[in-house]
Length: 193
Image (tube, rainbow, N blue to C red; front, side):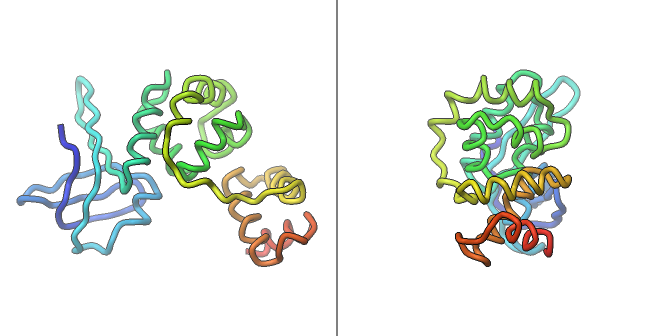
């Protein structure tokens, strides 16, 4: 099994990276979080890997952190979740956010973070990962808290934003305006960016 690759980053794009080591270029599928952590092309890079074997294909997936790789493996254990859907889930939110959504049984957040995940899949994620994800060691997610922030997030979601994007925008608005701001001000600030 290929556990990690270390070498020269010769290509990167959202969703993929190529690492050259010992004269061989390995193409890896990566999440957006891993893509954003990659150095410039030509620099040395180290990625943890997961080799997915199918009858007709070998696919290599790369991760910047062990937590992300652990979550990927957990997601693959959920019925009807394949590697590309698992990667899209990891691209839609941070490991800490995903853990919180699962533990809080926040089906709406799970449905809105990734296209193609509906109510049944969200329920399956919660049911099958609720126990295993509790053991996952991640930094607590510092999302916006309080009823005012939750109202602002709900308003942005009603306007068509994804749950993850709404939380990020409201979090930024809270940082700029402070915790005393009302929900209308938070929504206006979030929409201004």
